[in-house]
Amino acid sequence: MAKKKYRFVIIGTGSLASIAARCVQGRDNLELVGIWAHEETDGHKIGMDAGLLDGDTPCGVLVTGNEEDLWALKPDAALVVLNLDTDLEKRDRIVGGWYEKCLSRGINVVSTSIGTLINPAAHHDQAFVARLDSAAKKGGASLYVTGEEPGYGEHLAALLATCSNTIKTITTSEIFDYQTSASGDWMINLFGFAKPKDYVCLFEKPGFLEFSCASPIHDVVQTLGYKLDRIEMVYEKILTEKDIPCGVGSIPAGTVGAVRWRLLGIVEGKSRVILEHVNRVGREIAPEWPQAAMPGTIRVKIEGDPNLQLDFSVGTAERPGELAYDGMVMTAMRVSNAIPYVCEAPAGIVTFHDMPLTVPASALRSEATYVEHTIYRG
Image (cartoon, rainbow, N blue to C red; front, top):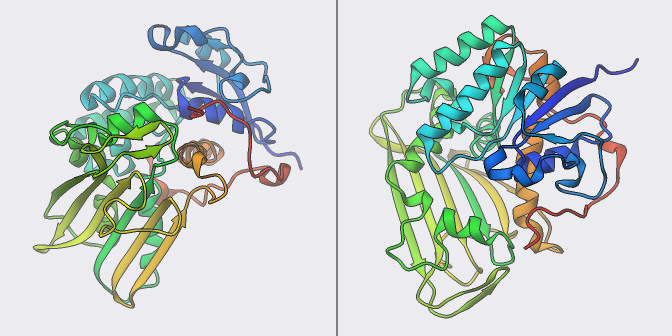
C-alpha cells in the first residue's frame, strides 16, 4: 500500500530550512511544495530553487517572498524555522504570529523556533500559550516544537531514568569541542570565543539562558513527578594561554577559549536536575571540565541507584570539521521527521510525550555517510 504523502512548506531559508529542503528529497511520505524567505534578510534567495540552498540537486520548488503563495498551496503542514533568538520577546511575537496564521488555516506546524514551547506549561506567558492552543484547536491543527537541545536531551534523560531506582542528580551535558568548526560568527555570538573576558556573549546576557534553555529542566522534573522550586545559573569562562588554531583561523592568547554554563533545577531545596554546556576550542583548554571521547557529545548522567551514564555523539572522528553541520542536520531532522506524526496528532499543542517515535520514512534509500553541502563550509 502506498504511504500517504504530506505536502508541506518551509518558513525560513536559514541553515535549518536549507538542510531540511535537501534532506526531504526522495522521501515517499513528504513533499516540499513551497518555501518562504524574508525579503529584507534573505531577499537574494527569492526565486532560487530550494534544493540548491544546501546542495546541488534542484527540487523544482522556488523560494518566494510572498506568504500568500504559501496559503494558495493549501499545505498539510508548515516547518517554521526562523532564527530570532537574540531578541526573545520579538521572537515570540513574530514566530508566534506565523504559528497562528498557519494554525488558523488548518495547517499543522512543526518548529524549532520557540524552544520554551517544548514544555508549554513552563512558558513564562501562559496567555500566549493559550492563544496558540486555541488557534490550533479552532483550525483543527497541531503545533509541535522540538529540536536537539532543548528538544532531544530531555527525551534521552527520560529514557535513562526508566533504568533507575533512585536518583540523586540527573545531568544532561552538551560537551562540544569546536576547534575544527567553520562556523565562526556563530561561535563568537553564542560563546564569545576569541573575545576578551568582559565581552558579554548571547548565552551570558542576563536571563537569556533561564528564559530560552530551561524547558528541559521543567520537563524532566515534571516527568519524575516533582515540583521545581527554582532555577539557578552558574557561568564560567576560561582564557587561552596561547594562540589556538581552529577552523576559523585562531583563538588569540588571552581571549575566551572555553565556556561552561549550568542551569541547576532546585527540587526540595537541592540541585537535582541539571542542564549544562561545556564548549571549548581544543581539548587542552579547561581539562578539569567534563571531557568526552568525541568532539560532539550529549551526555546524560544519573547519580543514584544505579549510577548510569549515556554518551550520544554527533559526527565522526574522521570528519571533525563537520561537527557543527552534523548537529544542524540532527536538529533539522528532529522536526522534519515529525511532520507526518504531527499531521495525525490531536488538534492543539503537542509535546514528545504525546507522540510516538518520530522515525524517518525511506531512511534506507541511500547508503551515503557524507553528503556535499554548502551550509557551514567556512
